[in-house]
Length: 266
Image (cartoon, rainbow, N blue to C red; front, top):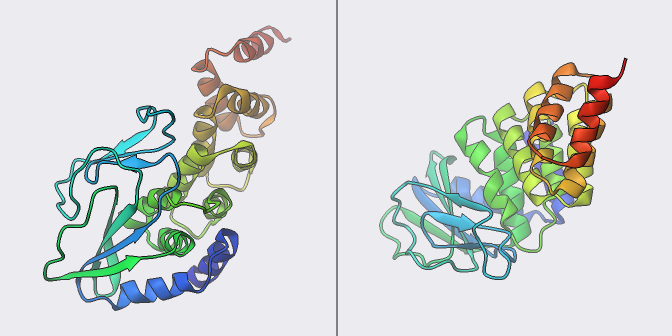
């Protein structure tokens, strides 16, 4: 799928508009330096404005899922964990994004020379832009563009992540990132998508392995049955082996029953 077709597909899946294309043009037209933009974060997301982003927070507990960095960027003020917004900093040179950093919470520090602030943008437009960037860039920027897209408010992200994971024209490292965050965003429907990715014989091996791992991170009531199904019937011995390995880490009685069956059958 070409970058242009991918962007159109992402916008369709996200319910976005041509505003995402406009956002991409605004970023490309910015002078060399930093480009800032802000968008609303989904419920359960909070951050300290600098190093830490937490998600799936419930009842004041934000420790189960978190993301942190060690860089010393000073574009955003530090704070206690605040529920949004998402703040994106893009390093742009020659109209191309060279680096991408996401923050949640805090406030922008005063913009100095070489900083272009695009203000607040719509969440569907931001996610459409980010996922199109992910599909096009074959380096670190593309891989890192996936995570901030998952933080956006009021966007059903998993269908677009699923499409990105299946896009054989996208870089493998970006597709693995899409599968990982698909697993983090997965409800029952998304988990079915992970199962199909793992079972697709035409799928890139690394992407299939990432799908099996993502299933292993799901709650046992959805992840374990999917892994058992893969272990029983997947055509690839390597994929079955991966599923069995992660079942072995689950301590789930259903996994133990499967092992007994596999070890004792004639």
